[in-house]
Amino acid sequence: MPPTQAESVIKNIIREIGQECAAHGEIVSETLVAFMVKAVVLDPSNGFNTDRTLMKGDVQKLVKLCVTRLLDSKNPSLDTIKMQVYFDMNYTSREEFLEEHHRVLESRLSSVSREITDSRACVREELESLYRKIVSYVLLRSGLGSPTDIKIVREATAALQSVFPQAELGTFLTLSKKDKERQLKELTMIVTGIRLFNRDCGKGGEGIDDLPAILREAIPATTQHVDSQLEVVQDQAYRYTAILEKVAKNPLLSRELQPYMLKEALYNVRQYEIFLQIILPTFIALSNLWTSFQDETVLISILSNLTAHLEPFLGTHELFFPEKVTQALLDGVTVKTDVCRMKEHIEERVDLADFRKLEWLFPETTANFDKLLIQYRGFCAYTFATTDGLLLPGNPAIGILKYKEKYYTFNTRDAAYSFAENPENYIDKVREKAKKNAELIQLLELHQQFETLIPYSQMKEVDKHYIKPIAKCESSTQTDTHLLPPTIVRSYEWNEWELRRKAIKLANLRQKVTHSVQTDLSHMRRENCSQVYPSKDASTQSTREGSSRVPRPQIYIAGFRGGHTKTTYEVKVNLTRAIDET
Image (cartoon, rainbow, N blue to C red; front, side, top):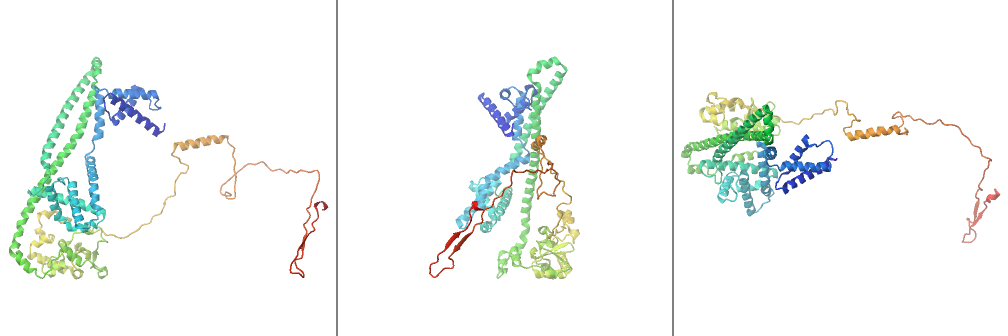
């Protein structure tokens, strides 16, 4: 029977069994019916032969046996099978549970994400609507509050505006679809972190559930229930096992207890015990997760306290430079951000031809360009040394100088050239300046130069500061197509039916006559042989010899040369002899 036809027959059998059970008031799943069909067929006491095709009587017998077993509500074996089917259909690993949850969440957010990434907002009203959609997306993705609650929306909007103001929507709309989706996910994580931080500080967190309290109650209650169920079922299993051991020693007692299906009951409780033990490690993992969640709670509390206690250390400079004094000093001065300073010199770049003995690194030649540990926390060493301690951020795009396994950046190309002429001079100036201002040792990470002042938090990181750059270059390789001669067996066949066809063909050749021919194209290409009868001379003789000859046509035309008149007259004369005159 072809596979498609066999599959159709099995589906019909399963459907018929399900309808029979439904007619008796028992609703069964197709998975349970399929499991039961397999169990009945494999049971040798039922007399089914798996090597032959089921006849109509076999199908009827199979349906009847399956329906009978599925309707037997007092059979522990059926309960065990139902338990196994249910567990297999509903239990997966923790990773698969979370993966399915995330898949469902992504499917729910796909429409909202599509509206945001496909938006072509131009006017003010459209931009405001797009920003509200981003807030709704952040709330839906984080799961911390409903996007229909006005208080939650206001809090999420305030958190989003602190990192992504509405003025940045123009830049957001110019990104590609993939970059938009990535930025939406990053904004969700940032806003979620801000809201959790505010909740811990008591300044927000509207609509955020108290997960620690929920888990604190749910985990012990659930594990306690599982433990109690496990204890009960283990006690039952121990009892059934003891009874069966006693029955094994007393054959008479075995015949008395046979109708009670004691073994099936033991199988049932043992299966339940195994499933509970499988579920219990998940709760143990959840408990460990809860412990780590507690650690995160403690960590966020520590970070919150740390942030709160850092603020008082900013008060002194405000005493020396209040707002009025600062504004007076800024008169006629343009305040530039670090980004603006970098953009001013974005086109400047070090020319490698000017430095033969020094190594310069660039983004296109270094794979881990962004991960290199820059000296002085990325500030320009030349500017710091020549301006009595002015801190200006260096621009890595100009080029990173590698000197004695350390990396330096500069805010301008001129600064880079000046530093490269005598690096030791400027490094010594930075060190001397740090001796006068001890806070620079921590600020500029000069711990290796002042090892006695290394902070405890970075004591273990001293040997890990150096990161080797990974150079990038264009390279190519060439290999031979086939190093070894091919070993393909052209006569090999994996298909059984093809081998059978060839066998039948060879068998039929026994009754065939061999013929062979050779043409000009196949000549000398392979050896050919054929067998023919030898030629023989033969002749015939007729009764008389005879011959015939057709007369030769002779036709003459006169008058082509014309005459005295203007009109020309031609005369055609046929002088061909008749056939009987020849």
